[in-house]
Image 1 (spheres, rainbow, N blue to C red):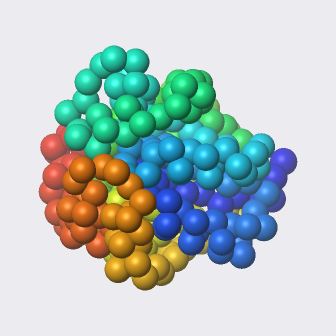
Image 2 (cartoon, rainbow, N blue to C red; image 1 turned 90 degrees about the vertical axis):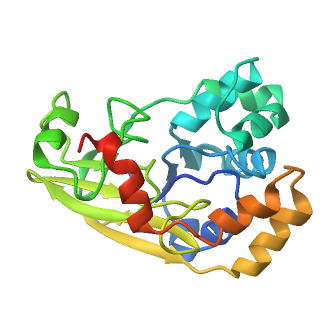
Image 3 (cartoon, rainbow, N blue to C red; image 1 turned 180 degrees about the vertical axis):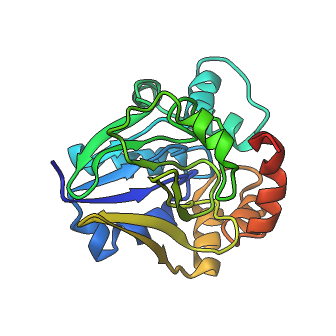
Amino acid sequence: MVTSVAVLSDIHGVLPVLDAVLDEPDVATADLVVITGDHAAGPMPVEVLDRLTSLGERCVLVRGNADRELVDVARGGDSPHAETRWAGAQLRHDQVALLASLPHPVTLDVEGFGPVVFCHGTPRDDDEVVLVDTRMARWAEVFADLPDVVRTVVCGHTHMPFVRLVDRRLVVNPGSIGMPYGRSGGAWVLLRDGQVSLRHTAVDVDAVVAEIVARSTYPDRAAWADEYVRSRNGDVDALVAFGPRDGR
């Protein structure tokens, strides 16, 4: 059983912010680093996957919907997202194989929490949307197949950090590393001693944007970085956009 887990999510190919978060003392010393999906669909996909694999067995990667789409693109499919189409064409064969092999969800025993389910959208679907204000009837539907012994679920996908109780079950979203909605910088979570701590790593946004523009070959990298690294989309915008997918 591990005693501390740093949880990151939705890196989306933004290496400079990932590096800043991995340099945090509580991330560097955590027993495990769990990434809850959408690792590479963005401007620096090859570099991000190489950085994550360099962490070895200490890093647990969970599959996200964008990871599935990257594999599909790399194997001749298509995507409605331009950055995914581009990123899928950049990946090496070993990286495609890695993404294709990722599990969803992942359950780990964490001291003070017991079995914790780490997923992307929800435990049953990596593309399903739940939000901080999702109604209880929908939560009950989403968690219907979870065993009672699971009292903590950590998800990603919606790029907004929150912690809330859902009928005595703790639900956590660490937010996003590469495409944060509402606040620029790297959002992440620390699970330790039975406590959940929402964390935020400040970055020099101008420097991150400049590094992406200098190092990536994605044609629209400057506009992409300006929109997502600078967090032009706020949490209110995201809630409005995701609301219909939440069944409301």
